[in-house]
Length: 75
Image (cartoon, rainbow, N blue to C red):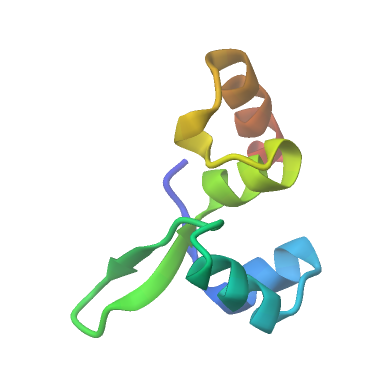
């Protein structure tokens, strides 16, 4: 699942305010990617779920944890 979402969608998914999501992006807690010609900031859903469960980005957790995050994200 390679789904990327906006900060507004991340805010709705997590229950955090949009400002909190933007602050966590600025602090480097939430990794982002810039896509398209206008460089819109996008967040990988796997990173978001991983941060909520393990407080680490998806690529920094072990395989067992990744399987759990994949299961949660697919629900």
